Image 1: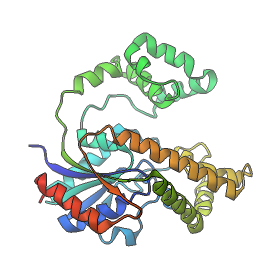
Image 2: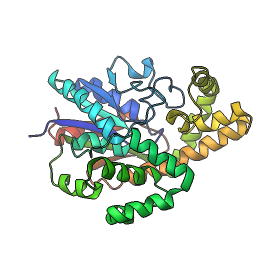
Image 3: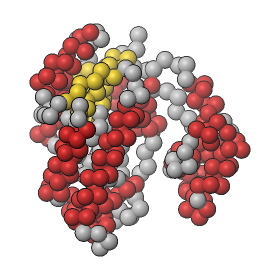
Image 4: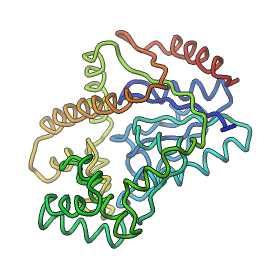
Length: 314
């Protein structure tokens, strides 16, 4: 039997951090973050990393574990998170995976099927140089020659996955399509109970996102970006391409005002939340808790308890 874990998912600003802590305190659990920006050291305000007060004494893992210049894939995240999850289970605690990066959560729950290939290594750098010089079209044509199924499946705008597919082929001699087919039938490493949070009215979600962005600015997002640059972080570093950091980098470079950056961050955050929901809705295992005007965490905790009890989590 696969060990049980809990996954709390949802779009940005929906209350995942709070519910994760409440569940951890009720069930004697520990939180494992599944957020593609919270893994970076120095990204606190813009990544909405939980504060000590928000953690409320609950151990949190996979936060601030990477240098801002590093590139992390879903596979790399899973390979780092799985030993953490297994360690929590060995201690007799309940792992609670909390985050909005659905691909990373899926990879950790699945626990296998990571195609070989050193993402961020020599081959990736060569492919990125070609992308910068020639654009995506010739790379997609090359992929079409060796892995037509992947080329058909991937949109030209999805440059990262096109590069990844070529990287796997060049380094292993096996297509990423073949690899995916081989691992599709394998059972997941964990028996995950999924709880999703979202708003009934998307306008309420947008309003909350806008408030969060305003609060980030008040807490010093611009100063956080300036501090990252003062440490010698290059402007093209992965971390500085994140929503919030990229826009406020423009303020420091003089290409936009702080007010313009704020509006851009709000827009990009709302768009990102929509993409998060699109991804999560493909998962039929998610038990959705739907917020009305306000987020009622007492109700969410009660409903989550009912879901977990029915799933045999005690």
